[in-house]
Image (cartoon, rainbow, N blue to C red; front, side, top):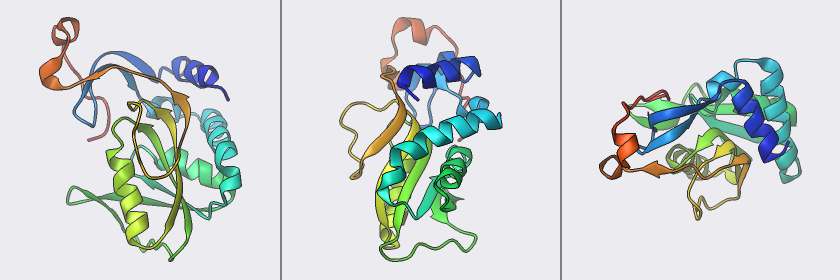
Length: 188
C-alpha cells in the first residue's frame, strides 16, 4: 500500500477531517486523522493491518504492544497478520501501564503499534514500558506519521502515511485558525 493509496482510503472512509482541531499533544491543526472512522470496517482494518505487517514481517516480532485506545484495533490486526501475541498498555492514574496480567520476558522482541504519531508521547511511554520490563523493542509501526522530521524514538519508525501536517502551539495560531472554533475529536 502506497502513501497515496492509504490517504485515499482515509478520505474514502471519512477519517481525514478538515477544520480546527486540538490534538492529544496540545497542538492545534487544520487536519485530523480520525482513525476510528477508518477502522470500523473490518475489510479496511485487514488492508491497513496487512500493509503494516508486510513492512515489519522480517523483524522477528514475537509480541505486538499498543497503547490504548488508538492503537488497539490496528495493533491487534497487525499481530493477527503476523501470527504473534498481542498486548496493550492502558492508562492508570494518567500514566500508561501494563495490567490484566500482561508480561514481557527479558529480551522478548516487541513491536509497538499506534494509529497516529505527532510528538510521539504515547509511543515513547509504551517503549519505556517494554524497555523497563527487559523487552527488546524492534520498531514502531503506525498508520499515520505526522511528526516533524527528526522524531527520535530510538528504534525505526515505520508508517503507511508520512504527511507533514501543520501543527501550532495554542499561543501561535495563524489568524484563520484562531477565527475557527476548535474541537478535540480524539481520545483524551
